[in-house]
Length: 423
Image (tube, rainbow, N blue to C red; front, side, top):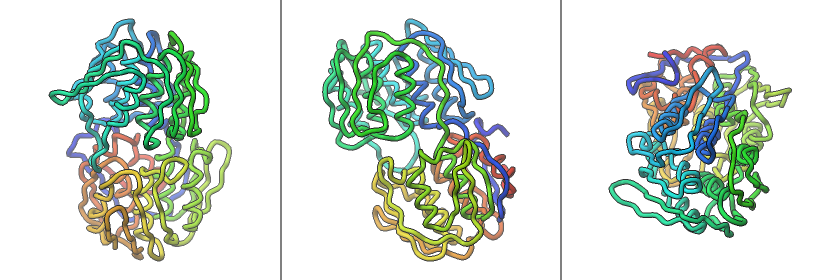
């Protein structure tokens, strides 16, 4: 069964496993490659993007670009994107509703064509995430928007650089603004910009195209507008969330593994936290060595914008805390409602009490296998991880969510010695 084409009926079966041993290689960052694909809309020509994971979200973004008139082809982990001189700057509901990342086509379409029609996006089911910040930021450059019949229509006859202060360091708003500003007249200063490694990867991609961006990875970014850009070749940075997933797996199951491709400098706060839990993590050439030879200790965890603990890490922490020694309090500061998977872990015997933005997790010696449902990408992966420490069988339904962000999670865990299979 291909990991990038799972049906909604797909399920993953997990039996207790451990200790894990071996090497697993992480692929390119999902949260980067989707934005690089959107950025290719800024210039005609042939783009070559390497280290691209074979995941559903990449396939869907490819379909979205093809709907606009772009040609997208993949051979192995290399994606070729051929962008014509003229496009149809529209993103329809049936494509956008699959994933929220689709909204990042708005900035490049407005910058290059002066207009865009994009369906109000869908995506993971973990609460409301307004896109008002995206629109307000683009309006400050001179864009205008109207919303009707489920679509956002934007116009931008002449984007002009200015200082934009973001209310919150939103990754998506920073990306949309960055891709619009590169072709705007004059200078744009983005204050309170998101600082994630994926933002820096996008900036590197745009600079290679001929943009003039400085300050990527810092809270203030400066963009000097240029009149045109050109196609480039680029290699995507490794996926830090995928790396964290394998960290969590060995944390739950024990053992000693090497995560090839993982970058410690992209995961500093995460590594500090798992170190406090008793995990031994050492950087090696092109990767991390991870060793766990005892039950983890509970810690408190709070999600924060980068370089803090990413909200995508949180389900993995909750899975680890479910079998750690002690009590940990997990606080969600980014998205409301992102504890919906806690009920699934409780079905497996976890002791979790959710109170608003907080979850109190009392570690159990072991969990109990049960039928559960994956509500989104990272929560689904966390349920698979929890199943490694559950007596009996854990059946995770709706595993197609997991395939949106992981290239063959089942195969990679199996190669490390886990008892995981498609059901």
